[in-house]
Image 1 (cartoon, rainbow, N blue to C red):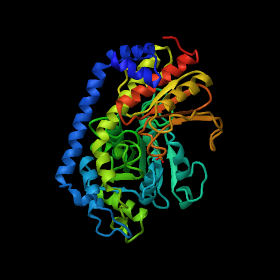
Image 2: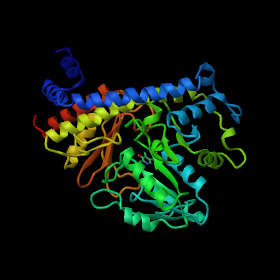
Image 3: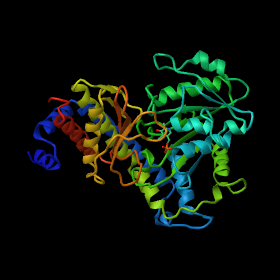
Image 4: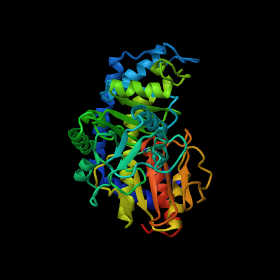
Length: 426
Ligand SMILES: *Cc1c(COP(=O)(O)O)cnc(C)c1O
């Protein structure tokens, strides 16, 4: 078969290719569902672009202060319409997801206010933003206190605990949609909606912010459709569609977003300044491609889960489980397994395919870390990548893939390297 010979040319043996093809047969219905979500979300993006009459003038570069930047302002209207919010801040000056979250939090919390996470400990980098780990300029330093309520042992919300934790100083609730690199489940948009409704029932004027990283376009609804006052994310993840080289977004109520703009630039200036530096074509086109890119990444995650589950490895989430983000963890059980897996992902890359990933002592981690990525945009995790700390349970976190075919090749190559190392038998 010609596809087998192409894979062979890329380094995948016919046995591995056939193993993958058999797995794929069993995933046809799942893939059809994913395609249906992508089709719906593609429509959503196109409708928002049509409503705002996107045209070539919106792709023009601006420099300097960026006053009257119509391309930038219109992109923000497109994001707001796409995510059904009153307003949006979408900027290259937002350097990453952590920065977007920092802007959203510090703009809407004042001294004496309390921040509550009702879903347990937030993403690693937020610990310093909040001041859970002391850090210069943390919210804690500015007199914002923090409280968290852990999930119940079965991964559901501790409603009783949350009710007790909300008091008159509780100003903002932060809800992380994706599990990130934690072991808890990721939440569906519906679950997030229930949690938001509960928090607002406890205190009607509470601001609900959702860390939407890795979740955009995975479902047909977003947290902003179920009551979130702000949704926040990175453009080098899902909504940048692989084309945005930098940036972040905050979509939400006019009041919240306008405060974010004043915090990002300066009081009095707000959304009026911020040149687009020629990035508008990438931002518009990236958003346009994002639903399809996300669908490819989701297929890759499910394919990886199904392959490794079949081989007896623990995968989180399991292959059959409904998806709420694009991250897949595979517990390989050994250092050798992690290295082989990551070598496979690396050798399938369009960029840097010739380098060999090795575990190294990364600052901030208490064990060696291995990473595989060969991306057009450095650090982009909507592009195919895998990483993990070298310690029990020896799990790699796998995500992304700008196209399904690339994600598939990466997984086949990982299987090939595992097999070459004598770690699996097909
Ligand atoms: C990636 C991520 C962040 C932080 O984004 P960076 O762009 O790496 O700063 C925050 N929260 C979640 C859930 C993420 O996945």
